[in-house]
Length: 359
Image (tube, rainbow, N blue to C red; front, side):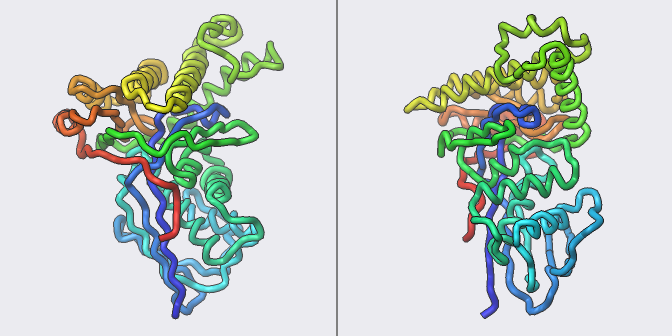
């Protein structure tokens, strides 16, 4: 019989730490119940025949193609380049069917989910010189999606999708992570329908935050952003130009909020009200300091809060995308209805899910 492999990779929500992972600061993210499913079957050829009916696309790739020249945005190719470095050498063809329930360009990492599923499939089908586990899948997905394309993104998407559940990810040079939960009831995703502006926003915000840090380091060579608390921001402000001060302030504030959230998730019984308040505090920094929201996102957030949400925030890099609200169980339907009536093209409950896996 011809070999078949089915891989599932979930979407992800960043709960705390947006625009932090590219600074080497921690994030708290979770995998959610929207997913990419990759179905594959050996086809007796030396080609991958990839069909993506959701977007009306089909592509054929020879298993021997090494992609010495990489085209911008070609993640199937960059993944094949990366896995070969780890002893994963394709030697037979497969028919690949990719189907997804993840909204596209909505801030929940539909493209990273496809990347994780594709790399997971390649490793399962053809092996590797390294032990294969979910952390290894995340590492290769990050290399293929970010490093190969010199992208401004961080590590959150690939690791949150690969590891699953609710994860605290320390994105510093010596990356570490821990699962801090498997359930967060009352998560509601609201899609604005406005395409997010990932690359332009990430490039701009990352550059300005890094420039602010560099200005401090010109005067304090041993400066460590992770050790700065909000009450100490003024001590460093004199080293930073006026234009860049907001980006430094935002990084420090968001890091402090993420640390407070981590303490909440460590409690035996979650305090949903406090977690929601921290989500809203994080959103306020993203909206008022980094200015990554758009009017429809603001309207959806306001509607969710007025309908009784514990908290709500924008999801993704900004400039559009989605929101996530944390809702009391008895107010979920009311909050979903309010979000839909205030600009969302869709709103629905999602649950925390496991990471990429084989069906």
